[in-house]
Amino acid sequence: MLTILYFASVKEKAGRGEETVRLPAAVTDVMGLVVWLRQRGGGPAAALTDLAAVRVAVNQEHARFDHPLSGDEEVAFFPPVTGGAP
Amino acid sequence: MIRVQREAFDVGAEIASLCAGDTAAGGVCVFIGRVREFAHGAALQAMTLEHYPGMTERQLQALEAEAQRRWLLEKTLIIHRYGRLLPGEAIVLVITAAAHREAAFDACRFLIDCLKTTAPFWKAEETAAGSRWVDACAADDAATLGWQDGAVEGGS
Image (cartoon, rainbow over all chains, first blue to last red; front, side):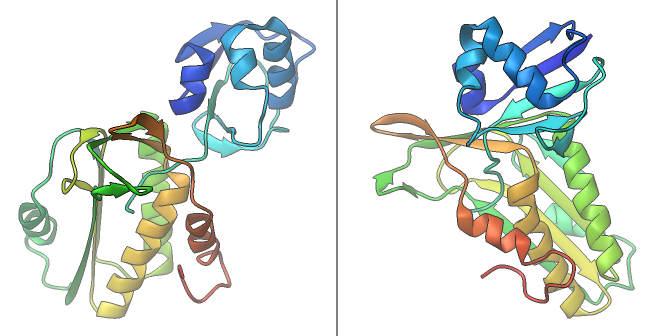
């Protein structure tokens, strides 16, 4: 099973912080997951409509949207990070 | 060492604890990031930091390891807080201790610059107008780029 996490403004739009999904066989990378989530609809689809301000991590490492997925990863979607000092 | 915590930290106690028994470090550099009272022209009432438990620790540990690879450091400590913080409260603490001051200064700046663009923290600012998420800053990305291998200067 694949765990999907949403953080900050992406979490607010998604209406949830976490979900677990069985990845369809046709989905082989992060962009495929995004397309599938958009087709599924609801909050996550709205949160992932515009990817300009969305970043992704796979298994807690920053990743690109062409990062491959096998179906048992932890994938996180979030806005660009803003930690640290002013 | 890295710590991600909700609680406030005591800078003096952290320096003393980090450097206890260490007689090799001739220079200790400390950076403290604090909540500023103004946010985009409006008075800030509070700031809430959300983070990604697990990934935050991994990213901070990776940054610390990178600093220790680049500079000869005796000790390093990064503490980053999360949760709701008020203006004037400390958000982040970076301490670097090295035999010579150059390494301590450079590594400290490297850690705070790169932490801002790699550690998964997000700030929401509360003002009289309500709460809003802070957008990432292009200058911060530039500061991190300045530290990529080959670059000499960090930040701007």
